[in-house]
Image (cartoon, rainbow, N blue to C red; front, side):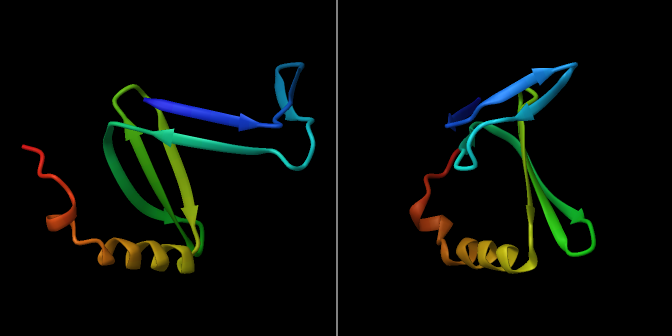
Length: 89
């Protein structure tokens, strides 16, 4: 399931193309639930692309710089998954 929340977001469709025409203070939040898979792979010279997909063909991709990837890895290490998360069987 994919949810998309757009604020102050205006687009223009013209000659088959999509262009943002709104104010520069636009924002969006995308949430993807019930994932079927998550993978990471090299992206460009220095970044890592993390891709999460659900069973309905929706995907969220993030290109992370090395410092962002290290921060995420540290956050994951700090979680004690055995104690804080329920076991799904």
